[in-house]
Length: 617
Image (cartoon, rainbow, N blue to C red; front, side, top):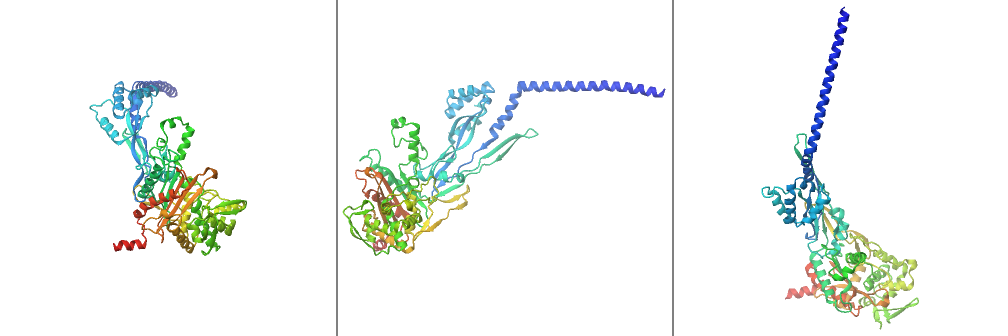
């Protein structure tokens, strides 16, 4: 009996519990359905508002913070390339369209503050109605940005201006426009160096972008985390802006003065000047004509009329750009002419083939192989000592020295002096020039090479090697950068002078300087003399290929003072716009004009006799 009663109770209890559980389950399901329905309703009716609240804050606060590219300064700390803060105007189109009352006031402020036409905004509204990031204008200046900030903060008068915000950015600026354009270079696509120091030191000048993160925490409080950008390092160049300015002033004056002679419209095909410290390889100035405005590197209007530019194809424009941007001092090979003669004599002295007591006889021409090769003086120089052969730039004497050296020794010294190879200068696109191989050098090639024809070099190559001839034999690696600083002005790296090799003995150096002092005092470089200074140097007149065209490259390379030279000046005038191009006086006079201003500025020591005279006065 008891057993049956327990079974009955268990059956009733189980059925009761089952009904209760079913009811509970139905209640939960019903509550879940109601909750989903409510969420669906909220999302359908107001979801965009809630989303906008979060996304707007993310849009404005979760963003990339651009870095500031480092400055380039001259050796005295003057900025020659810098990055200025600017702003990009961004429109959140979806936010502006979220309320019809926002549209017209926002369009009005875009027009009044930034000069953005209404049609432009309406086109974006039509094409990109859901856009959260549309750039309407780039590189807005600080004053304009401040004017908008005042409007944005004025909720009373501008309550419905929504969706406009300003994005930080930087634009590269060059305060001195064309000055040192070959050396500095410029940037493209924001922060990519195209040429010059901007290209060679691109990674050092560039910093690292920062990031601003925005999010809602578990308490629905907006939190922000900022990773600050890293500013790029500052590059301290070896360039002296004052020296550079003197150089470019005289280059421009020369070309302006010769525009209306044989070839109207241009003063020369190229005019280039390089000034270097022979004691450490630092380049104080480097310039060429034509140059370009670093702030507008694609502006051709300085050299071509509007109709001519309009008629150019894109390929022709690119060709003209490359001609303008080409750094003649580094990238343009040419036949050096007689400025190479000191190197041939140096090789003879170093090998012992020459002693300094040699004598030569010049009749104006020398028959070599199957060729009659003329001297620069077709009537001949007559009897010449070794010193006079350099003073008078006698080709016949130099051809005889070349024969005495032989092609093996001559080629060995060409390579020792750095011709035919990169100097390692910290500028891009350096040319190495072209030399004869020993196997391909015949007697006529050796003869013409000995006085600077039939091989190619660059200004940087010849200048760096010439400095070793006058400083006692140390070949310094040429350079245009001396230090790297961080954003706080602390030293990161010193670019110390680097001696790559020895080229000549001190004795040879002293003898060559004596010969080159004679070039200015008694020889072809008399007009290069600067009153009050002991000045040595060498002239050059190279007939360009094809020889029948009668085009010439004129040059002068000089230094001061005679004892312990502190400055080397190298000038080239390529195809001057004159009737008789072979007159080297054009290059010599340009060099003299530059040296007359540069020497006092640099504090170059005057000649002893002149100093005594000044003391007496």
